[in-house]
Length: 304
Image (cartoon, rainbow, N blue to C red; front, side, top):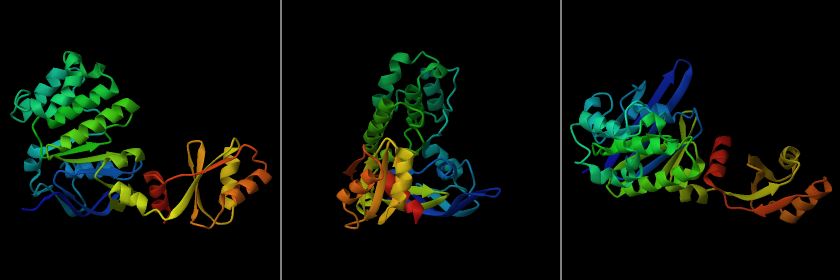
């Protein structure tokens, strides 16, 4: 039996002159937590809407659990849980009413599939009579996930589920996804947050409608071939310019209050760079060696 849950072959989609997806291909095995990582406008939402049978591709084919997204869209909708990026439940219905409504649409009940959602629903059950529009961002996301799961789908698509949610709720949400994996549900999630990449089994890095790389997060980091230092100084914007001009530096990117400086291994000595910056007037300069993160790898792939 084919163990592939999602197959995408050469999918393209344009919006007038904008190429949202450009010849995208990938496969997701059943039960995998697969992440699409990329900034806003990279093509993540368009891809999710195609797989959720809401948008037609201009070119290529895609299937979910063996069903074609164009020919078999009705069958896919019965086995699919979809959580769009924007909260789309009924604001003037209570938590309980929203969940009951979605269960009824799929011919089931809350009681029948309660075991699947209980870990999530227990956190919002004390507020089951509250209107959905009055919930916090984190509570809304938990309710939306419950509604996406109430019919026991084979696959769930979560389009930027943690955008705009506080850090604690983000962590709780990903913990819920890890528990859902134990039910052998295929989970495809998109996010603009690079730190969430490490929480996926595999990730696809996407930019301008093209997939730059697909691999396990630790393998993407292991493939990074440059030495990396974090450099800080109070004269931050001048520092970026001076680092770019320093011989042997491959790239410089701003990461918060630090500049991440990449260079070929053994091409630079930390003490030489420190002396150079001090001579240039950076009395408060701090340099430390760091391990690359997914965002460093993403920036490097973008520059190729």
